[in-house]
Image (cartoon, rainbow, N blue to C red; front, side):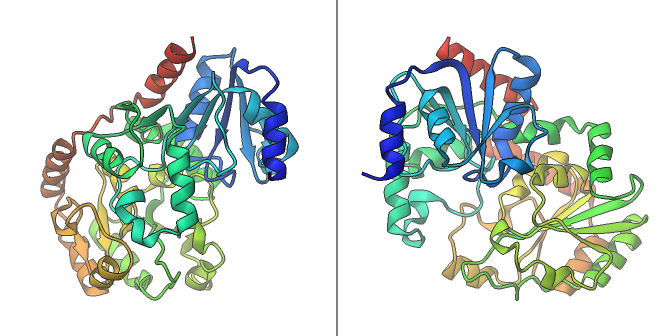
Length: 373
C-alpha cells in the first residue's frame, strides 16, 4: 500500500465535515477553468461554506477567497478525506477513494470538444491513464455538460453511466456576460492599454511538441488586422501549458507579442480578445459565445487528423473560417463578413443544442445544495 493510501485510510476514520468543499484544477497547477468560477460564485453568495483549493504552489495563490493547501501534502489528504464535496476539472489520481457521504462533481475542462477524448481516443492514451480514468469514472456522482452534443460525447466516451447535468459550462458565464469593467481590469493586469485591440493566438499542442506549424507571419498579421479593423493591436501568444518552456522561441525579439503561456486564466485572455486564432483547441467553442471573430490556422490539418488525434466535427463544417497558410490568413481577415459569420454561429449553436446562458455557476451551486442538503 502506498503512503498516500495509508494516509487516506487513516483520515477516512474522521467525520466528514458538512459544507466543506475541495477544489482542484489541472492537478493543482492552475487557479482557473470551471472550478475557479464555481468557487468564486460560492464564496460570493454562500458565506457558510468552507472553501479549500489544492495547489502545487499554494504560496502563489494567497489572495483568493479560499483556504489553500499543498497538493498531495499531509494536509491535502486530510482535507480530501473529510470534505463533503470534491470538485475538479480533471481525473482524480488512482489512489483516490470517494467516501460514502461525499459528493464528487467532475466539470471536465471544455464546453465542447473538437479533439476526440477518452474512450474515443483510446489508441492515443497510455494504458495507466486508461486504468485511472475508468476507476475515476466509477466514483463520479455528476458530470457537467454545456450542450446536447457534449452530453452525447460524454455518454459514449467517458466510461461513465451516472448523471450528466445540463448546467452549462461555469467558465462560460463571464464570456457571455461580457462585463466591461472586468475586461478593463484584465487588460490592466496584463499591461495592455484599454484602448488597444487584442488578438489572442492560442494553438493546441502536437504529440511531438513541435512548433513548426506555428509559422504565422505576425508582422503581416498585425498589418492585416490594422487594415481591416483599424486601431493599435497587441498580439497575445498563449501556447498549451505543455509548451511553456518553448514559447519564448516564438515571442522573443518581438515586442508586439505578449507571451501569456504561463497565465493562469485563459478565460480572461478570451474576455479581452477582439479576435482569436487557434487550431484544434476547444477554446474556439468558448470564444464563439462572444460572437467575435475566431479563425482557424491549420497548416497540418491532414497530418494532424491522420497521425495525432481524430476530430468530432468536420473542420470544414464549423462556423469558423479555416486557413492553411499566411496568404489564406491575410485574405480571410481582409474579407471577413460579420453577417455570414454570425449566421453560421447561430446555426451551429442550434445544431449542438447549447445550454449556455451565463448562469451555469448558479445552477451548479443549486445542484450541490440540493444534493447534500
